[in-house]
Length: 341
Image (cartoon, rainbow, N blue to C red):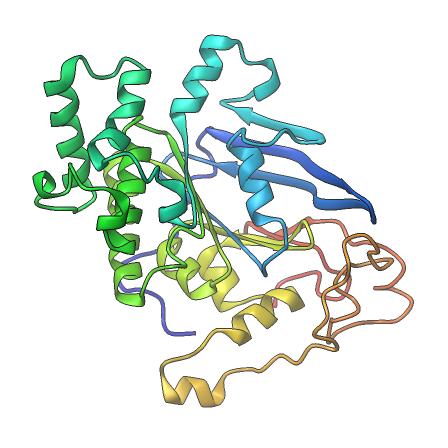
């Protein structure tokens, strides 16, 4: 992949208390074909001003994990904690505080915005609901401030428009502004840039990055694109998910530049490299199989072993590797690669 962004380096925020945590979080869906373990025991932490990126193929459990973290889905096992307290133990007032503190940005801005509400109505609904704005004038001023904060200017030109009158990038900025209206501590962004053109995507990522730096908002950022994860979460961490489990986690520069798990190496290998010289010398990882195992019939041992180029018979296919710390703030779940590369 291309060299790291200049002037930026990893910041260790792991000593700060977590705002949002998952501990052994599981989500199992019952289907006619059997139980589907969409998320199979995940431990994650989101801290103020930190970006935690969940990366993996479609269907690996990223969105289900995000929905549990946001309180939109009840885990079938484990816990989701807000400032150290399990969501199920929160009282009515504390639950309302959690709802304001943790905001969700969906992938499709057109589907997530009410088509019969104007931008003004969308942005002020939460303010009125939680008593954060008194009167129409104050609510309108707050809406203008929110639009300016996400670089949707002139704000007055957009307040009375409906979603169908906006471009995809403008709609997503309205969705970001709606999340900011609650003065959140954590924003969960679920593939929030995947439907946008590349130039608009970079602009929105820059806006989100400024909000992270200026307001100290923590991000749980979900993407299947490691290039996007590298750009937005360079100072944060990446957790790589495969079939409902985290198989590698660590500081973004380390995971991107020195991937250890064979699956992470395959993801990095699949990223398009714009530099011709780097593209010619880039390592190409060839998987043993392109087929992803069925969640209702998972293989024995390591879930990745049917596709893994480093597969060792009698080891990888008999015991599931635990996620363990290997030094340097890196977590890894692999029998074959168990230390620094």
